[in-house]
Length: 364
Image 1 (cartoon, rainbow, N blue to C red):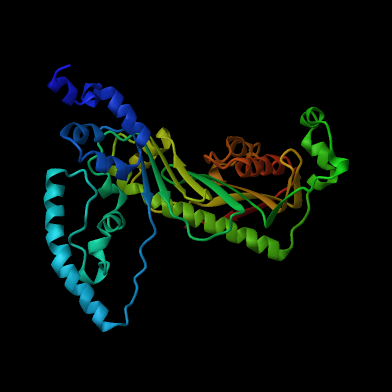
Image 2: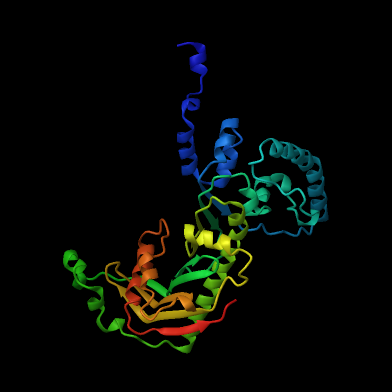
């Protein structure tokens, strides 16, 4: 074997289609931006990636230093180290514009005090998703993952949008615990699978009224879920306007509590009506099912205050529609394991109740 053959990069022999498949599996926008800097070929191919995911970290908290000497030292280091490095970043960004953009026009008082040590984080947090993705020309499926603040883990929601809210499915409870095994519960698993759960629970699945405090809590759940869904939907307007190839969008969070999604038809509807409809949340009709305690026999657990809420625009409800179509779709969260199955099972069982609460909400 010659020296030239030994030094040859075998990766260059791979066809573009295989490298694009690898980039589609990678998906992470930040990793793709870094990969684009490795070679001209990678720089060209990363712009054609079809599947992109973007993680948006929480904003960095500003720390007020009371020590004036420390502030002076930080200012000196910024002036000495960061400014020359910023010039280099500008040149790299001109040569390779797909890299994570840095907002050079950020006001001085808004910058992080330690920018010379956290330029990558600042580049991500100071830029909008549309700006970060500005050079990805062939995006078809796009996912944004947000960092969620501490919240109630026993609440799940899934919202679908077009030009306005299409539907929202909410499932929640006040507490969750496994069923204690005892000697009297050693049933045959095959017989349990063939036995209807509604018959196993008996009178538990009958309609039971909730107290005023319980009702207030559920209304808070509904409003907070709709507001969170509307805020996530607002992130998509600029992206969908600029990226005409996008066909599917998902915005979720790191704990899997809420999911805002749009399919190809809904994305096109949003493009057609962009700027025409001012209210993202139209007048809504809400149906709510509730039981004080729901035992999930197959999953061997109990959820107290089990609640199912189905929200749709008033005009999309029909007399025969009971919300079962949304429940059948489930939440679609990945990697939830048993927890995800429990929430889907709670929704399927509660929607079987013949009676439910019904209310209407004005647009906002």
